[in-house]
Length: 378
Ligand SMILES: *[C@@H]1O[C@H](CO)[C@@H](O)[C@H](O)[C@H]1NC(C)=O
Ligand SMILES: *[C@@H]1O[C@H](CO)[C@@H](O)[C@H](O)[C@H]1NC(C)=O
Ligand SMILES: *[C@@H]1O[C@H](CO)[C@@H](O)[C@H](O)[C@H]1NC(C)=O
Ligand SMILES: *[C@@H]1O[C@H](CO)[C@@H](O)[C@H](O)[C@H]1NC(C)=O
Ligand SMILES: *[C@@H]1O[C@H](CO)[C@@H](O)[C@H](O)[C@H]1NC(C)=O
Ligand SMILES: *[C@@H]1O[C@H](CO)[C@@H](O)[C@H](O)[C@H]1NC(C)=O
Ligand SMILES: *[C@@H]1O[C@H](CO)[C@@H](O)[C@H](O)[C@H]1NC(C)=O
Ligand SMILES: *[C@@H]1O[C@H](CO)[C@@H](O)[C@H](O)[C@H]1NC(C)=O
Ligand SMILES: *[C@@H]1O[C@H](CO)[C@@H](O)[C@H](O)[C@H]1NC(C)=O
Image 1 (cartoon, helix red, strand yellow):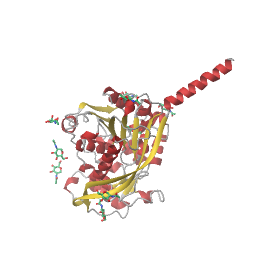
Image 2: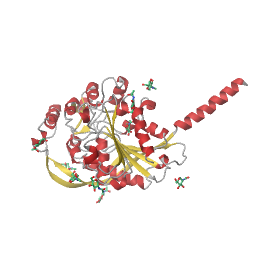
Image 3: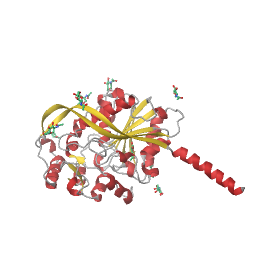
Image 4: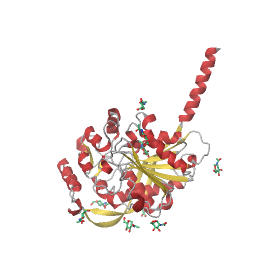
């Protein structure tokens, strides 16, 4: 009797627990057709990794703006691509405001959509799982040239403006209720980014503010000379670095030389575990040289955006703050970039580096982010 009671309660508990943690996810391959203003590339092609270090040295020099332009003009380009994406929503739906909101997550350089949904120790690291536990749904995708999305030229094709066009088109599809499983049409869409993905999300609210209800920009700062991180990155031609692994990428797709260079760029001190660092090595994606060259082509002053905006970056972020974000996140961003946002917040997340999501206190940052959204009815 006693033992059957115990069994029943443990059964009930496990049903309850799995309902609490359940998520329903669907993978998609989404055709897009993008017209964007692109820069006409005219810089030297990489023959070997010595050309890569030369390129980076020019990009990182203190008078880089005075060196020869890598471009010879601007033109309009139209192209069709396929974008790999995942949509996840909570298994149980009680129709709260969170459950009608979709978070659209755009990852940064050197990752694909797995940045948001760590396969290793998801309880401690997966933003998707954390958001699901708060009732949100998340759409996360592989940026052009990464993961399962179309592979393109790293010399001139995966430009920041083209990637912004993709984010805008995907957002339009979601607003129409496409690629959302059984979820239907959202009432709100919040754009969440990390690093280069934050630049794109910022570009979206600057150029098409009407298609977003809020933005969370992680791993981002403004007007900092953080070019030393380009050297710390220690980039080499990806297909030569790991023969066979990146045979679908041209010589303009580059990757860190080793895990230590990955740590130098993305992590800080003892705020992360080496196992997680090695996990991120295993899921890393090459970076295109044209991505590094065109990040400045995105308009960042979202002067007409009136919805909530939060920036949150690691205290010791080397990539965007030159190793110290204290005192530089709020201004001039508040005045220049988001003068009309509701309740603009600039948060220094303590102890960590650039990869907030893969640091010990990742869920501390997720809590700050999702509590902020919930406070604003998102
Ligand atoms: C390069 O930047 C410096 C400092 O921001 C500025 O003073 C200088 O005029 C710029 N040079 C060119 C060629 O744009
Ligand atoms: C993309 O759109 C353009 C018009 O904007 C059209 O000419 C072209 O055929 C489309 N490409 C594909 C593959 O759908
Ligand atoms: C969910 O709530 C909204 C209002 O908040 C209501 O319009 C809608 O009918 C509800 N949907 C379901 C399935 O209950
Ligand atoms: C990382 O955190 C950001 C917010 O800080 C979130 O938007 C993103 O999805 C997270 N990524 C992962 C892999 O959990
Ligand atoms: C999650 O992180 C906590 C605190 O760092 C750690 O004690 C725990 O072992 C981690 N969980 C797993 C499953 O590794
Ligand atoms: C990239 O370069 C190729 C070869 O010169 C050219 O055909 C193509 O139009 C260029 N694409 C873009 C987006 O500039
Ligand atoms: C916003 O930035 C664009 C260039 O990115 C510039 O043309 C425009 O004048 C700026 N607008 C304001 C209000 O500063
Ligand atoms: C946005 O803020 C700026 C500066 O405070 C102001 O001049 C401008 O009129 C505002 N624009 C809108 C659309 O509210
Ligand atoms: C974890 O992150 C939160 C949010 O940034 C912060 O308030 C808290 O102090 C952090 N905890 C530790 C131990 O750093």
